[in-house]
Image 1 (spheres, rainbow, N blue to C red):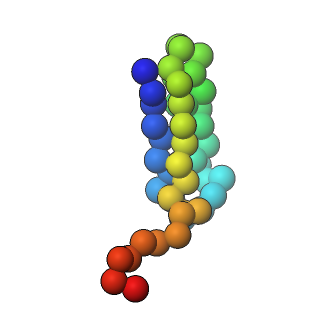
Image 2: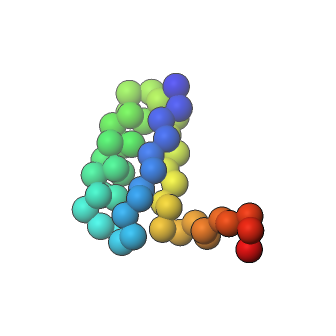
Length: 49
């Protein structure tokens, strides 16, 4: 099973991201493959630009 965590907060390392990291760590300990994507580090995409 793959667990995908999306961090949507504009603050990197904030409380929401800390909680997400804990949840992903728990899922990994239970045997799941995990991946985290921080949306604040992604460039916005607009096909019309």
